[in-house]
Length: 117
Image (cartoon, rainbow, N blue to C red; front, side, top):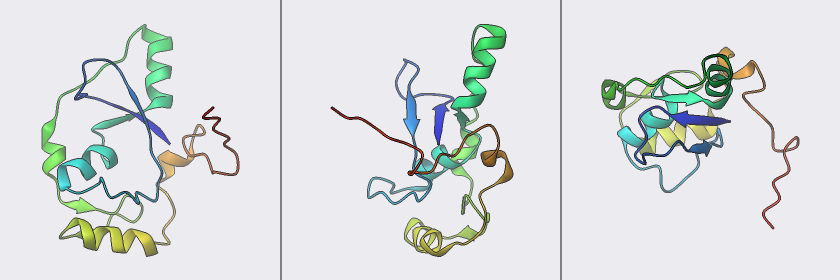
């Protein structure tokens, strides 16, 4: 899945390709988690569609979502801290949210080939 950050830490538009297992040692705090799993990020499919239709993408600055409680991105259960959230995610069997299953937002590793040469 790839999303565009609404209010980037870098001024240039940039893209993140995100694995839905969220298994990363770099993912350490609530603000970071919420920046990747809330409406703070825009899906690349939606950004591209908006640029094609309007010539630019609209962003909004709503930092309140970064302070929201930690929730599983699949089942939306709340967790008190990152280690407990990551432990839950490793075992969560819930389906992905329906909006992620539309317009090829999720790609399985078997359908992707990344050539890093």
